[in-house]
Amino acid sequence: MRVLLVGAGGREHALALGLVADPSVEVLFAAPGNPGIGTVAVLRDVVPTDPTEVAALAVECGADLVVVGPEAPLVAGVADAVRAKGIPAFGPSAEAARLEGSKAFAKDVMAAAGVPTARAYTCSDAESVGRALDDFGAPYVVKDDCLAAGKGVVVTEDRAVAEQHAQGCGQVVIEEYLAGPEVSLFVVTDGEAAVPLLPAQDFKRVGDGDSGPNTGGMGAYAPLPWAPPGLVDEVMRDIVHPTLAELRRRGTPFAGLLYVGLAITARGPRVIEFNARFGDPETQVVLALLETPLAGLLHAAATGELAAHPPLRWRDGAAVTVVVAAQGYPAKPRTGDVILGAERPGVVQAGTVRRAADGALLSAGGRVLCGTATGADLAAARDAAYTLVRGIELADSHHRSDIAAAAVDGRIDIPR
Image (tube, rainbow, N blue to C red; front, top):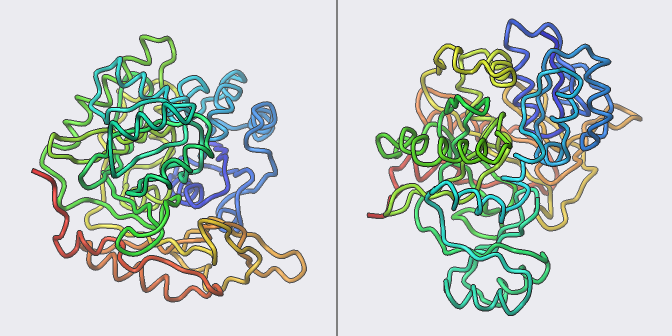
């Protein structure tokens, strides 16, 4: 199988490692990729949000499967353009990708499908924002209606901060706060059949103890030793299948990766958000534990044959990933710093480039790389991930020191 992977971040590096480990993959192309991805794939230049350009590259590469990593190309219609060339694409149509592209659209779908989620208002002016904030009270949850690279959400006790965020976004969705630990569940689907992967937990806040502003994600771990029994079955029954059925009813079936972001509340699982692609950094830990060949799984979803795919196989143990971020992230990350220690197994590259003059690896984004490790249990995986991180040299970088700590110590409380 010849596979084209679209994207350039840490998620795509993790996907690339999973794809090349599949014996059915003859050659992996990645566009545009990054230096880490370039160690296992043939890199090609492309504008990932240009459907015509990506589709033409897929034809040129003779791709048997195109895997679209990031959300922006999906919302732009890249998967549609690839399928129009007769090439299987793993990723939803532009219309179905609105589940992530518009928070208001996702709320509308959930309401129609009877999916448990937070009460919400869609607001586009200061007066409606004020009424919504009055109704729900603190802590305030304000979400940019459009794509925002994981940083469009503000959760705050400060009314002024909530109002300022709403003012800067245009249209926003304001929700009631959902109390309880968060879970990320990835579901591979061909629009009809749906196969859940291992639940994971990520860490959105930039600082230890969930302090500071939201980021694209500072670390993750899987599996979840504290998850309630039957959680995945409940989510599939009450959330995933009703959502897929509603999208089919609307004539826009969702085929690809449905990311279900959940809060485990006293009333049970509630949807915080849907995404239309693998999450970053949860992909790093989930795929590290997946024993089933990845390309075959994604190809089955892309060709409508997921129901016939064998049950998934998982490795024993646990996985942890810790993100190393550039100075100034998430506000104004500094780029161009030299990175040392990034070529070791387990180090996943996200925001990196090669300097033409001497081949040095440089930082080129906010989340620069991450250390991903497995272990016999969560504590061992956590120790191994932090050992990897300590071996990375990047001036003035920062990372959280508490990824998976509460789970290891048994300090995750589910509201009753």
